[in-house]
Length: 125
Image 1 (cartoon, rainbow, N blue to C red):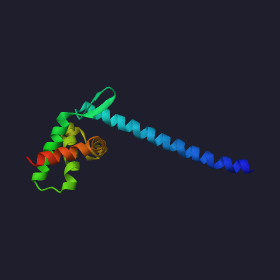
Image 2 (spheres, one colour):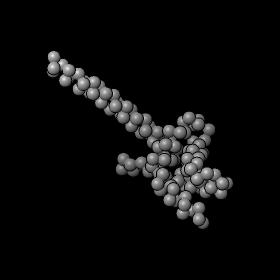
Image 3 (cartoon, rainbow, N blue to C red):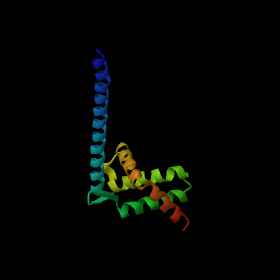
Image 4 (cartoon, one colour):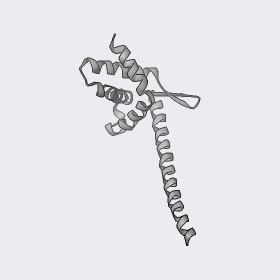
C-alpha cells in the first residue's frame, strides 16, 4: 500500500506537468502564428530563424509616441497606445480591436526597453 500512495502524487504531478507542457506548446504555436501574420503585414521580418521588428514599424511607433506626448498623454499610456495604433495602421480595416491586443503584447515583449529609450531621446528634440 505504501508504494501506491507514493506513486499517486507522481501520477498527479505528471498529469499536471503534461498539461503545463501542452499549454506552453499551444502558446508557442499561437505566438509563432501571430509573428508570421505580423511579418506578412510588415511589422516583423525574419532572418536566421529570428524575428525582428522592422524599422518602418518602429519609426511609426516612435512618431505616434512623440505625437501622443505632444498632446499631453500620460506617460504610462504613450507606448501601449502608440503600438496599438501602429498595428491598426499596418493592418488597416482587416483587424479588430480584440485581435490587436495579443499582437501588441508580442510587440511589447520585443521592444519595450529599446522603445522607451528611443522615445526619451527623440522627445528632447
